[in-house]
Image 1 (tube, rainbow, N blue to C red):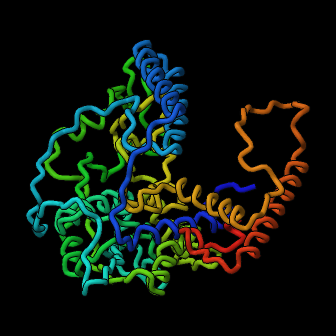
Image 2: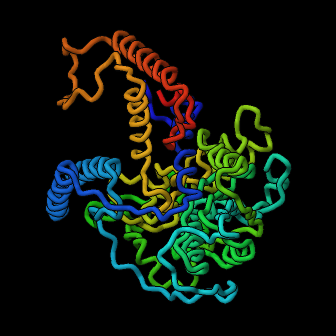
Length: 494
């Protein structure tokens, strides 16, 4: 039974299937000849039901907050998280109203830093396609962005001198890397003057620092992209978090009377996150790109384009640490380098709600009695992620106007169409619903045992494969390049 994992060390068939799906998604949007036209679908009854339930839960949450019923609030948060996950799975985009809305953000100057070069700003045209050269060539771009150096490293990416290597800056750059990537795409669109679309993947270098590979639709000159990368930065307007105030057994305690965390000695409430950053004069950290910027022009339909698509998705089936070379054959110096980096990540706040803030004497947003000082469950602090906490694949909205669910549906539609064209009648029922689903209970006599379920699944897959193979043989002389999924092998399409 497919588990849906994207890591090959957990399930290689599912991981390879997910990777090939991403390859199809990249290929379909990279060298388009016509503008993708997206028409938002009308909300279904399920969409309306979930949004209505979410609205009711918002009112119930506000009432529970007024009554200081923390258990009810926690239960509502978990329910809303499940609803939001289902809404995202159904294709809902945009920002969903949070249960705890953030306070009005502090307005700060948008004036560029004096040490950052200026960029030209052009009106952004409503187009996503690049220029055509010679009347028929419409090349696209392959881009790689890296972070700056934090110290000398050897051939395996391990620090030569761990005492002088800047692990603090490396950890902060890794955590805030997605923000500077977003700023880069904003600057690119403003600079080149059209709605640039991209398919990008985040990967670690051998030293553990993240870097970006991106397929960009249309051609952009090397000089422009290098200029944009040099002029792009992201300022982190967070409270200073350079020196740890609490550690070991001396950590802030939750006070029911004050409804806040207090100092363990003086019992004085800690300053909140917003209070601590109210009068900031300088940012706590600034992220910049490194000097290495690789740019290459690619023509669609060439062997080089296929090779670069494979390179883009090469490490999607591996965890970040494994892709960085921290496998079983890693050297002792590599392991020590990773240990120092992970140790710094564990004491680096990853968001305004991170419990690590309590170690610096600051109460994070959304703090409650169950918050444990210094114990954050976010992916940024885990060794297998090395600070890369967000999505590994970044796709712009107008890349192909198709979600992964749309590509999966295309695969199923391709198989059904092939069976119909070949006149093969499946040996199993296809779409013989509708169905009514319900959870099973322990001791239910209608539920087969697990070995029986597995045997049924194996038999079903064998029938699917036999039907698909028969259809392929019957249509061997037909052109099967009519679908974006035609490049998949027979086993995967089945």
